[in-house]
Amino acid sequence: MQQRDVTATVPTRDLVRYYLRLGTLGFGGPVALVGQMEKDLVHEWKWVTREEFREGVAVCQSLPGPLAIQVGIFISYLRGGFWGAWAGGCAFILPNFVIVAALGALYVRFGDLPFVGAIFYGVSPAVIALILYSCYRLTKLGMEDALQWVIAGGCLAVTVALRAEVALLFVGSGLIGILYYGVVSRRRFGHVLPLLAAVPPNDQAVTGASASLVIKLLGFFLKAGTFTFGSGLVIVPFLEKGLVQQTGWLNERQFLIAVAIGMLSPGPVVITATFVGYLVAGFWGSLFSTVGIFLPSFLLILIVAPILIRHRKNPYVQGFVKGAYAAAIGTILGAAVLLGKIAIGDWLTVLIAFLSIGALARWNVSTYVLVAATAAVGLIAFPLLTPTWIFVK
Image (tube, rainbow, N blue to C red; front, side):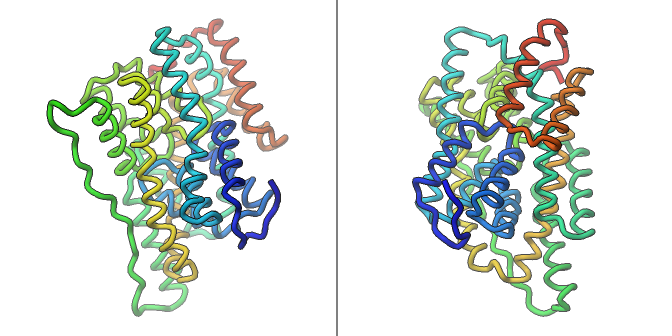
């Protein structure tokens, strides 16, 4: 693939090729994947401008659903249009689906996967390092003044205090951005362009004794993808309540294994849905669960992206983007704090986290090398140290 004029259309085959590779080799969760896209598509290949990428992150973080896949769909729409968005998004998901469905089949066939805990032990602190380093890159991309840092700090505090992302944080931060950047700083106190929000359709619960388990899975994950704000594992509390407490489809151990598989596999973390679907209803369960978790992202982005592109130069839209982007930075850092409590629990995981940050910052180590190295450390150290806090926090 080569550099292109940022105003030019990117052929669908190039979009598919890039997102197949990212979906196969992209580790580290949503922020690391977004950071990789920023590195590749803004700086190296110049498919999109800094402003376009920043707008995409802000809008996608303001919508429910998984961040990384939404940014991928948004960029694919910018450079490939409607069908390019579907092609790029599906290419992003496909490798992850194949890998995780295969792991689900192995789990069903052979039972518990003891190596998962060992790999989780080594890789998880490196994932936290990837999140923090990618967040650092994103701050350089779009954090421009003190107000944005104040917004980010407030959103960080709320996310940690409530142990979840709050949708109103993004809307409220966007409104603050409109007032400050679009009204106060420009001395415009007249008519303010109304915000055009994509309102997701009401979720219809699957009812009736004759409804199949596959359709119930589709309904559950459509609801998760439509109404849950959460980058990466911040969606976990919603899934745990539905899958373990309400439906009883999984026990606690199976659920934590599913989360670990989603975290350790390449591509979007919410591919956990694929593993869950396979455990509950085999291949068709995995397929329908995957469709359910990702379909709302396609629909929401394809509704919002044309609106944003049409009004990109409007000062109020630009103000909303700045405010929402700052909220995204704050909630990502908050998610890193919450995930750090799961991933870091002893001296070795602390050491792995610090060394990983150093390797990323000093030597620009690739994500793939970092994950492979820390997975090897986990496989060696886990049986020696036998940490009891894994899958417990």
